[in-house]
Image 1 (tube, rainbow, N blue to C red):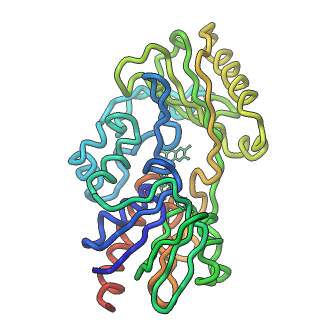
Image 2 (image 1 turned 180 degrees about the horizontal axis):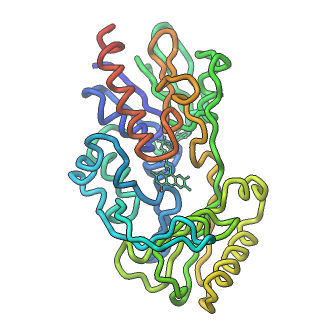
Length: 327
Ligand SMILES: Cc1cc2nc3c(=O)[nH]c(=O)nc-3n(C[C@H](O)[C@H](O)[C@H](O)COP(=O)(O)OP(=O)(O)OC[C@H]3O[C@@H](n4cnc5c(N)ncnc54)[C@H](O)[C@@H]3O)c2cc1C
């Protein structure tokens, strides 16, 4: 059976592993858990989905909702939302798909069901070729030999790993936006009936209450995403300054005297794809000339979870039809 390495256990890597035929697959993941940008931060019994928030009900990827429902990974909820708070847009009820126990249930349940060996807390720093095989290196280990290696990480992070093997200068660069997210727990309700919405003001592009998603928390939990242009301008802001700034903005906007009792923030350098590989050159992945190294991620298709899933699905189809037949 072919020996395969998958770098990254975000949704694109999990999708690839799920759609490939059974192979001798080993995952490498720099974090201690699967999911990447699909992440739930826990504090005591409180939970904050601070990367991806929800899957659109009309995501358009055939079979994805059914698959996630079978894995008990998602549930459908109706939420009161506004498309543009700062412009006083009408409030509407919208159905969305969220994680059953936080958004991280999506990658956790898929990863668990795959049963492939995973090296967590293992950041791959280089890839070396020996004869017809490849070896992966972390700071203190070498892994391999592998017949095929798949990189399922943001494009920019893949460049240093692959530039020795694939001439990436031949490809236009997919682009990403960066986002600061701020998690706040208040001692009482903020006084809005909205559960989520866009454009709270000219600095905060998205806001979502966490209480309606899960079991009762003992505090009022919210996640706020800063606009990407604001994030670029304030990329180096100190976390505590950002958290206080957002707490005060929010209190002003909702005219609330709620007190923030929990504050945390996270900066996502590669948050959402601005220009995908498909938009740039009509391709869904990048491969080496020997058809043994592949680079993919959400950035091949677009900015959302369904794009990561689609990227893995499309490449698996290609591998089944072409590369595996070559062996
Ligand atoms: C703030 C924010 C809000 C979002 N909101 C939504 C939303 O509401 N709805 C939606 O559909 N999408 C949303 N998204 C986008 C969605 O999260 C991504 O499109 C999707 O999760 C990307 O999956 P991926 O597998 O391509 O990449 P990633 O999730 O980035 O996975 C890459 C994995 O590789 C690992 N890794 C990286 N480098 C190495 C290395 N050298 N060695 C080993 N492991 C490595 C990382 O730790 C990570 O686990 C949001 C993203 C962010 C950041």
